[in-house]
Length: 267
Image 1 (cartoon, helix red, strand yellow):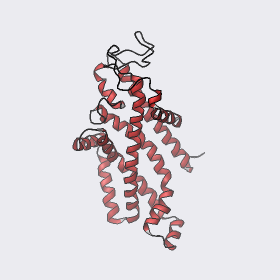
Image 2 (image 1 turned 90 degrees about the vertical axis):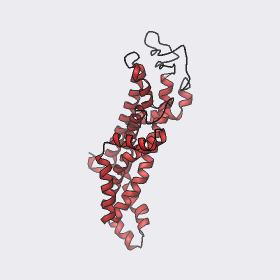
Image 3 (image 1 turned 30 degrees about the vertical axis):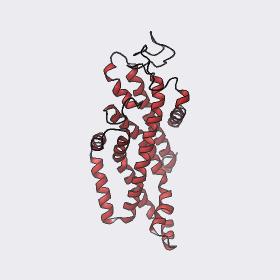
Image 4 (image 1 turned 90 degrees about the horizontal axis):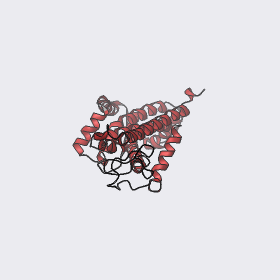
């Protein structure tokens, strides 16, 4: 189920210009806060209604899928690249290097994730790119810990000993022998990490520290609609539902991948 929803979201993001009935930033001065088409006063031109300046909610949600999924994938790619490198170094070097890396990651983990992201964005300045960097810093320790644990487990295997005896160097052991066998837990962590990245980026957008208006990012749409919560429920409900569905889908996908990759969980 999670995979089906993720595929649908990816198709929405890929074909957003073709599927969206309107441009995401197109305004209509005669359609301010128009309700969804099934309510009195609604119109089939705006199936999910319009916002305070007459922009189509459905079109902004579809284009927002492209933006929010791009944020999730980019954050996971950045944090995985750095996290795998640090985890490999910690797993191979051991000693003082391992202690320094893991204690630094423990310090990051002790801080509330959203608060740490806010601090990073406050230092770098608000904006989409800075928000992505902030979220990448927040989720980085998870990839370092997963990689290090997998490397330590693999280092005791016979194929590593055989590779050492055959003259394999450290880099070859890292990237050709050990890393491919650590892929399963990293893939699971990446699928779960996309949901975390989407949620944190939406929170930063809601606080005005992430994507800036008129960007159709879901968190930014929620921030723009705060003052209309009681008057126009649709401007808040639909962006919130999109965040909920996307996060739940990636979490379900991660759980399914974990069950598939872990033989202990197979019946």
